[in-house]
Length: 169
Image (cartoon, rainbow, N blue to C red; front, top):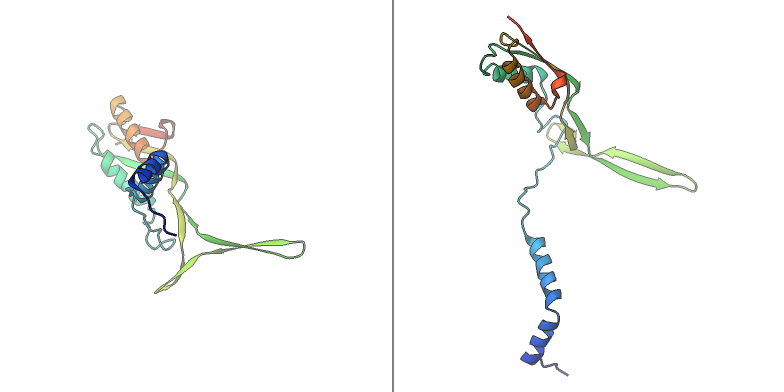
């Protein structure tokens, strides 16, 4: 037995379930909508694809940038770091249970490269700065001190109480 749908019946059915169909269509559109963010592959190793943190290079670059502040003169910057770059590898956790005990085993996920095996990095935390000292000829001027303190604060995340600007020769 074949079911024949008349146009009036189809319109009545669509009218009855129009909100359900509307929600389904909206959900389908949202599922297919691109998020705008491209997935970035995680760096393959602890030191492979990621840029290594170099405190001396950062201090030099910061000195060059701050030397361009009007009235500062030649700037020297010293930074102290509470913790360096931390890389957290991906681990594979497996549990096995015996009669009364359960045992958890964690293994670091590694990939084979041409030069051997390297850990896959799940998360890389930036260094945490502890304090900064800025020495420059214009360090006795309030306006220069303020500008240098704000610049160092914005680049390192340090609060103004952790940054000292001194006059130097």
